[in-house]
Length: 332
Ligand code: PBG
Image 1: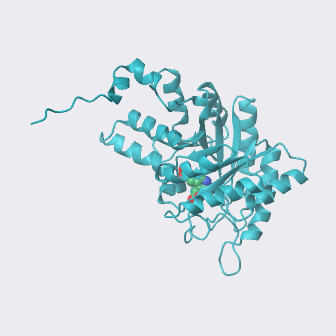
Image 2 (image 1 turned 180 degrees about the horizontal axis):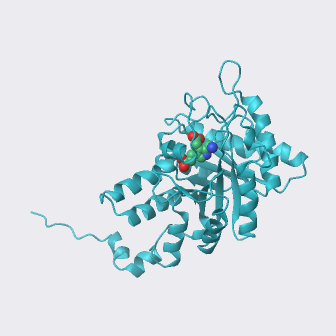
Image 3 (image 1 turned 180 degrees about the vertical axis):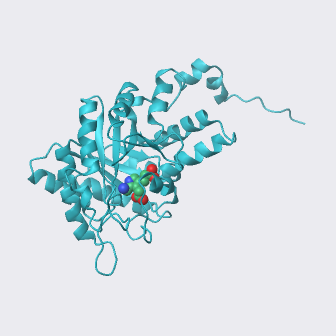
């Protein structure tokens, strides 16, 4: 009988003490690589809680500066603004109106930030259309790609004028990055940068977001957002956007698409970000509220996993709280 061999290779050595584990950690988190999505609702005087996203609110224009201050104080790298308009129509007119909620909020946020963090805007029509689609519809009710590009270029100029530094193109129309880049350049806005939501999947995890922006959708988004089963196509979309001039590309949602994220991170010459979306947030919050999961550990692990897979920065509704934990030394 041979005795059990004594292992010579012992990876556990480096896990022995907190100091050793800290020293060999491969993925560190920093507040500057976190981006906070912020909803701003028209016509309210105080923040309105979002039922399906406990802890997240629709801000009023009045409460927005304080939210920006809090994010800046926590060291968060940027904010991504979404507008919740009072009135919607087929063309999403509020998106291009300089007095539309998102454009007004952008100016308010840029003033409050005073350069402490990067003010970014969601560039998409779904919050502004009455049918809830990310573009305008043709006479047969389909999302009209090229007619939508015209709306996006107007929206881009309105957002840039309002003070957005980074335009988050989230509509998944073909040619949207090139169209917006050209329009910005023609208008002398060469310095306004483009964040392309390149690999944006048709996901169930956007569910709570619909409540956050009070949007009801007729049909679904499968004719423009990616099929959740498609990995190669996610990489292709990112490569096309880089070609068209995207300054940053993004994968969305994050947690269920870490393979796509890793592929894009390996191939991209520009920064790669990921969006931990509303449903990813709500699932952890709901499980934690039941006492089924350790909330803080799950939040940290979920964001760390996204960073580990290759994201240079992460959009997350926990940005401020997580940044504060990091600053307090609570994140090993
Ligand atoms: C489009 C947009 C959506 C999200 C961000 N930008 C909704 C969608 O495409 O259906 C979802 C974000 C989230 O779920 O947190 N304006």
